[in-house]
Length: 219
Image (tube, rainbow, N blue to C red; front, side, top):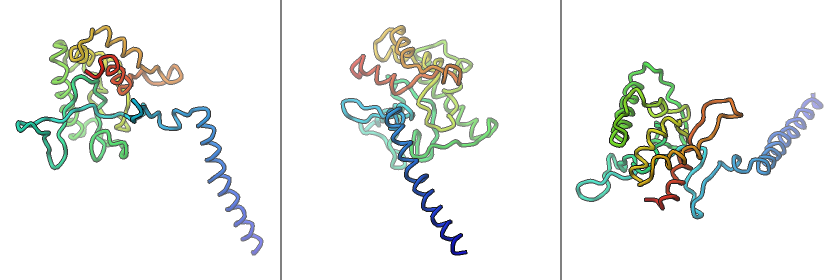
């Protein structure tokens, strides 16, 4: 009995050190050498300031200014609207506010759920209001699914090419650029399918918007 207990204690200590300390440190070391960007969250800096991650979607909005000339608030939270000079990310419905990186989750609601239908209708309306003035040919039938539905994580950093091409009309008008120039940037910041066959090409919204700022100096 005593021998069995001693053997068990030794096994626990040895495997705790191997699997709880040595193995994690080894994997961390390998990842830092082989994949430093992914290991550190693909953080993106501008002039030494952290502006986001290539792997996490975020909002590109501006405060709504009231008649008093001050930003509006609702329930002690700042009221915002999409900033028309930026490409907009895929809709997000994380708990605690959209694009809350600390609360990545999926609603688990089915396509026939009333809440899903209401959210989809609201997203379609907002998308049309934002883009139709710059592309009068836009109809509900042309709106890509990623402009309406949230992703599994609610933090998708990419949008489809179809979504980006529609928004390109608005961006070109707001930035004073040609449509071909904007479409060229879309192609440049489009990631190909994983391993060449998995998934669909995706446009990284943060990288694309930063490229636009560099090109037009934020105007």
